[in-house]
Image 1: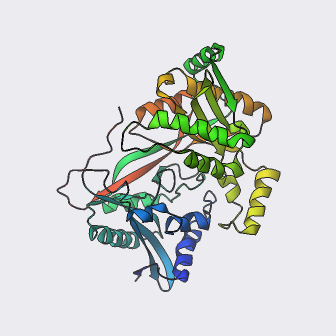
Image 2: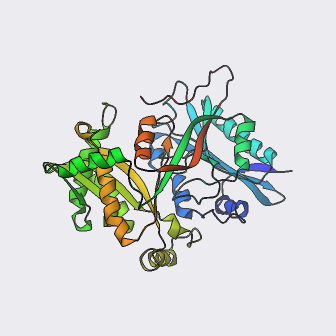
Image 3: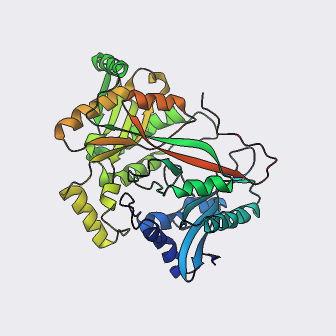
Length: 390
């Protein structure tokens, strides 16, 4: 028998963090996340969602004094819960031994908590935060290691979710290619046309000029993404905060800005895939962990993979091949130095065929699929998958 109890004490928190060590003891691809990255999600001092009336709860399952499962449930009242026709909560950080009874009991516990707070459905596994972290369940390719702050799971989790009644709300596709690979011919041609146009220029970021690039990033972001009055423009301070967070791992060869008549019109931001360093830290980033991090990153240079974070192109310059122009410039810079071998993307939803087409045009091949699942509490509510972005 087993029982489920809320996480209350420091010992419970430790058990919550350490359960994956048991689940993945014989899985060499798994990389233990940094404890602090998980803890920050549930810390009101670190996670700004708590200031919007959002809430989260964690539970652990025990059997004979051994932890056999864990789960978290959360309600993101700032954005996620009210983004659909009915209020939707989330579950995440799910781990369990290969016992369906344990898994279903954890799902039931999270469901009861969410339903008691007015939610009509739950999505999972998702994050109590942004979608670029801890989002989705692996459904294809359980062999490759996870990237930084990506969920990882054994195949039997898929059976748990689907047998319980979760249905795929959307698939999350991840792509990869060798840095030496050429772009598709049409992207090469477009890039060459831009290269021949003297009004366009491109440059890599320089750390000593971060305030300038923060402002250029903000300029492009606000023109490319702020389309509705409900969306607030990014401030310079917010842009600087992003750049400062990137600075410790920033490689100047991996971030590009495009200009038209000296005005910023595009950016391509990628970073070293730091999970290739974190695998050596055993979840800790104390003073010793920081020394080890610097050693493996700067001295041993163990990172051989690039994480492509984001493209941005202002509307009036979209469709002209700026994405290919920046990626090709990066390839010409990176390949001769033989520092990196491959580039991967964060996930792209199957509801975004235009972005998938662009990524594939860059020579990227799908290497993993994940899924965001939805479980609707009332069977009378009609289930529909996430709508396609036209």
